[in-house]
Length: 126
Image 1 (cartoon, one colour):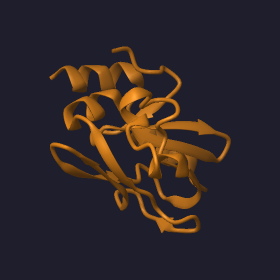
Image 2 (cartoon, rainbow, N blue to C red; image 1 turned 120 degrees about the vertical axis):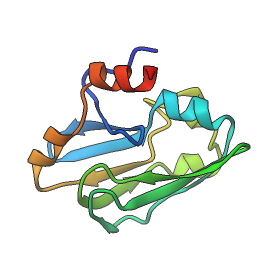
Image 3 (tube, rainbow, N blue to C red; image 1 turned 180 degrees about the vertical axis):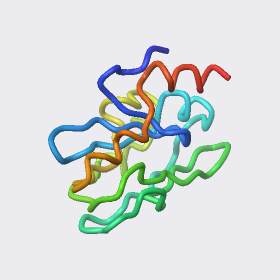
Image 4 (cartoon, rainbow, N blue to C red; image 1 turned 135 degrees about the vertical axis):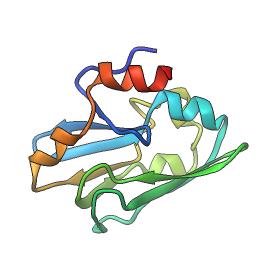
């Protein structure tokens, strides 16, 4: 799998697509493949303030339940409510329609701590 080069990635297998001071967040193709068929997604509430590393939501599959962590600090400004009725969208399109939430952030320096696509591909190949 090649990962979108304009995205940033975490060691916990989340991705961010940054536009201005907002970051759309989801889990990577590697993460969804490890989880298997996703059957439920717990979304955060709009307005929730998160520190980097806080649990943003939960993804439940037929194999396991896993937390999705906020890669950066910010406030949730949008959620993908389509996942409530179609959680398997994450399996079908993890880097597109399977996004989970959008965070508005104030400190762009946080992004410097995240991996680019090449570094993430090296990590996921391990």
